[in-house]
Length: 172
Image (cartoon, rainbow, N blue to C red):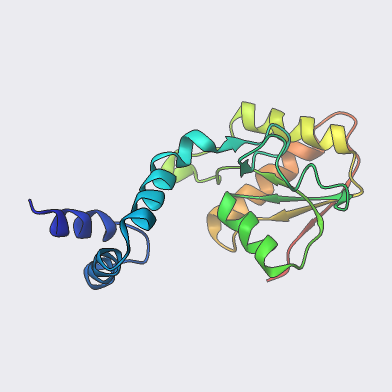
């Protein structure tokens, strides 16, 4: 297969990209100088190798703990539990929240055989116990899976020893 079609076929599999958008990206890349293309390729090739999972909250970052957990200006009395990295980034981009996060990394979806694992629950509880926040905000998606995840989280937190924290949910 020729390189134009091969790259187009790879890019069309990206979320939100179809064949036309993928082709536009390929033609845009063709107009770039080789140094820019080399840097882009190097960044893509090293993406997973150069990112770490924060040992405190589960976020992805180039350092551990992440920039959010190590920021002394963040409100350490509020913890927002999000399902994934994209949700955390959406909150940060909106600049509407200044507390800390915990990235769950999954949703509860019994039909898809997905549950919050014991390891994930223990990681969350260690984070909560280390922080002792005044409030925990559950920021799961407004879907059936998001609601089931919320109920699972409430049960996990309520059944934990030495955790007596106000639990709230984002309004929709």
